[in-house]
Image 1 (cartoon, rainbow, N blue to C red):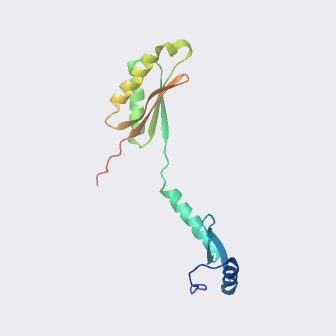
Image 2: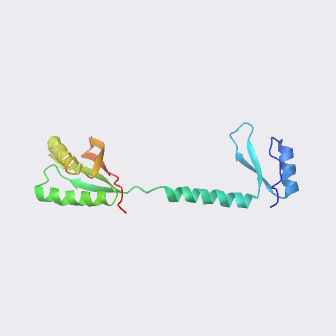
Image 3: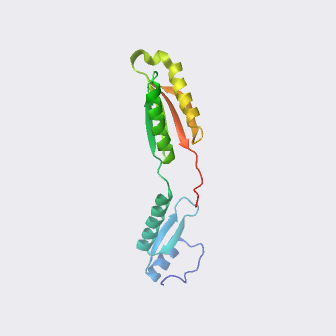
Length: 156
């Protein structure tokens, strides 16, 4: 490949440009914030391709966090609670985070303690498959908690 025998060292800008011209490659600034700035003599199109490839790999490795919501009222009855509990369980088993909240309509905000009881009960019921990320917190007309699934090792 052209340019493999370029000696590594500290060169002035004019020397770097001269070397790039001789090898018919491009002088690319790798780290502009360094003192002095770091440059490399490379094929610019190939450099962009490799950089794009690295970013794509990094993006592929990051996991996307899915957040599912479960809504309760301060006076949620037993059947509705069990129904929503099963949904939250399913979401956690699928690997999603769960945002559970109690929505206070109108004057029902006076039942904050009942809303907190509902959320505490949910935390206790899901304690085997989830961990609490955030304690119950009142934001406007909502009391919110976040639950994350506990990572379990898969059996082969």
